[in-house]
Every structure is written in structure tokens, then in C-alpha cells.
Length: 149
Image (cartoon, rainbow, N blue to C red; front, side, top):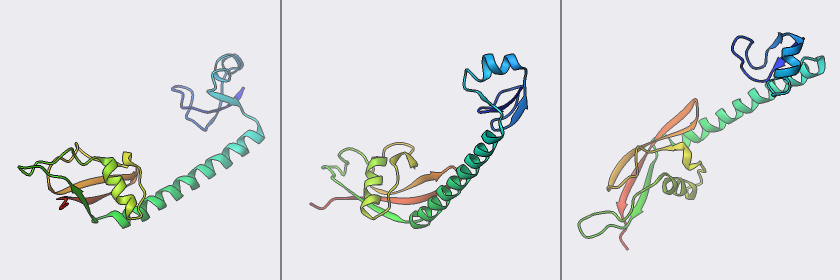
């Protein structure tokens, strides 16, 4: 029986490929477990269309990430924090805080994209890596300064 694989299966084939397997293996294991579908002409056309749409969506997401990276790359973002007696910060600067500062400047990114080695707990300039897409990343400088209130 010819089946269309929905997942990579070692020894059988890769996701998206059409392979020949025994009828029993297909009917009793692959199809009931959602690992494959019976290969029919309509299914193959719809799967090809789905693949094309997926690659187009991926291309658009990468393009969007590149345009955001151009805006962010090398940018200096100032974060104002309260400081105690000995110049010690109250709390720390987190990825959410950085995302909020960027959002106030019109650049919306998810806090999960911001890669911090740990919370920023000192005044000064800190390089922060932002991974917007698996193929697109950039750096920005977070300048932590004393709030003069």
C-alpha cells in the first residue's frame, strides 16, 4: 500500500514522502497512530499546496525578522532603574523589561527572543543578543542608568 508519511520514521522514510509499505503495517499501525495517510491523488496535491504555503509563510517570517533586526541592530536602549545608597540597584533588568522598553519605541518583540545570560544587576552598558528567527539574530546595547527622581 502506498502511504504518505506525516512524520519521519527510521527505516521507512522522511516526513512528506510517499512510500510503499505492507497493507497490515499501514492499516494497523501507521494510519491509526496518525503517522501516515493513504496516498491518494487529491491528498498529494493538497500536501504539496500545504508545503508551498508553509515555505512561503517561513519566507515572510524571516523577511519580517530581518526588517526588525535592521531597526534593532546596534541600537542603544536606555533603562532607568532606582539605585540605593551604595550605588546598588533595586531588583534587576529582565528580558521582559527590555521588551517593554523596545515596545515603547515601537518595536514589538517577544521577551523569549531576548537572550540574557542572567538578569542584569549592574549599572552601565550591556550587550544583549536577540534571536528573532532561527536564521536571524542581532545585538543591541542596554544602557542601565540611575533614575534621577
